[in-house]
Length: 178
Image (tube, rainbow, N blue to C red; front, side):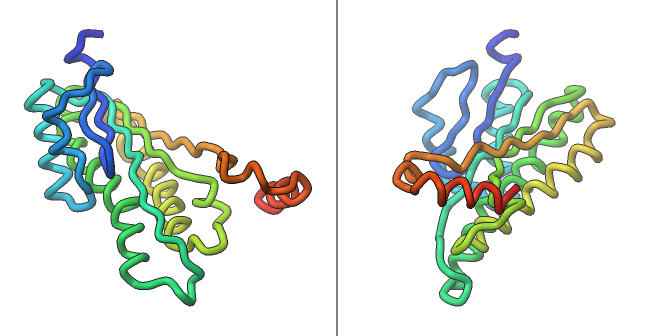
């Protein structure tokens, strides 16, 4: 594919527009929080203006404001859901007219095992990721007729943070989530 033939838009915190693995300094302006329809439309339109089309949209934004439910502030709840669920909704909605007009596209939503299993102290994060799973399934059914595929990936939650968790406790946790 040509450089203009593949556009990957990674929208959210710390992300910008990448085209054919090139990072352009000008895109730092786009690397702000995208959690409203207006901001998403601005980013998607800028990408299309600069690159001519949008073939792939990757929704990979999240913030974490962990707290036990009884201690979680409304602000923490709203921020996580805005970035982790409303942002992908807005970016998808903004990209959809372009993808339909060009005859197709790909949307990839990055979710988490917490979206189907939940996590202690992460009700907001788990709700946002669970909502993103449901949004992905609904959009896949709705957009398929336009040659737009919608999929989700849920990377493993085993990270360097978990290296110190004793193996027996970690394995018991995995069994609980299965």
